[in-house]
Image (cartoon, rainbow over all chains, first blue to last red; front, top):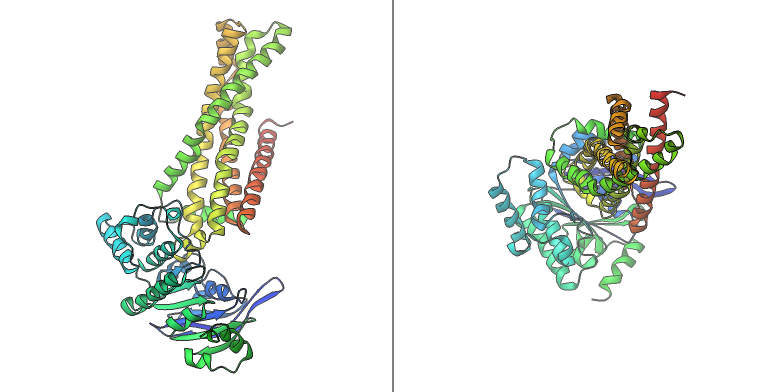
Length: 246
Length: 237
């Protein structure tokens, strides 16, 4: 479904990605773990075409996203939904307008009643009720904003959902809740997911496959068990930060 | 910036068209700036009338106050002062809003939802500016003349007949069109610079602040340069 092949990217003298190759099968959740500044977000922004690679390619359903631009790229993005680290809700719009936005823009003739039904349905998936519809993002807690962000990502029924640090800055209960949301999106809606995170516990909970990104390379890649058994010293050190506490 | 402007131009002619966003921006840029432009226009006309009266009285030519004020307003002061006022009020807000959207990833979010941010955010602001800068320039002209009239007739004691008569004699449609053509170009310059500075903002709150400052400074200088260029082209040396 998603094929990243020999991806290279530099910003000035900094080589951020150095030949990343990975594959995400349809319907699976793929987690990219790594420390701050390891290039995780840069990798994800290549997947959705926000960045152009210096070398290599990204293919989604056989379409090379990395070579598209303008209208073709805009069209290709219809398969995606994305949940941003800070939710990235439009602060001048209400919750309803935020969640309705992708549908309104995709189907401009959509009827108001149908739109409202879709928005309420997706808010229900993330356990939010109609009482939040007219609230602005500034009136929501961090956890609620993340959930509205997830509802907005799911509302146009995307094939692929990208999560950028979905649990960063959340308390343990809300983190657990967001993990459940990611699993629910996969199990109930069948979406393919890529999750960028440095939250090891959360990563091992939601991942079908996992990769650890370090210094522009994938230091380990495979199922959660395979990655945990990796002999790579950085991977061992990185994972020990959490597993040693268990 | 030129590439950004060309991209905005290209997206302006591609569907979907969003007239509701253009109207909202016209309300923000135009209706929202009407008060400050009106006040500035009125006081500029009043001050100009007093200054002209002081100067022309030396030659016993007070009757020409109305004509000289309206000529100065139409060709020069109305478009330039209106442009600077809108830059200060709406241009800075545009740069700040888009800059904040950029650094909080709202623009990236729009991109990922298959909505082109230039088409959604920039094009309506540019179209609204092209329409509202000349509209507000006309408001400035009208209220400036009212201010000059009140000062000239009721304060300086200039006879109404010559005041009106010389206004008609001085002002021709070309003067108005000259000012309006400036206003359209100022609208283009200010909207492109402010949206571009906001769109390209980086580095959090500080970056947004710097972007806004640069947008206002560059727009103000842009207005003065374009004003000089058009005047030189239209009037010559």
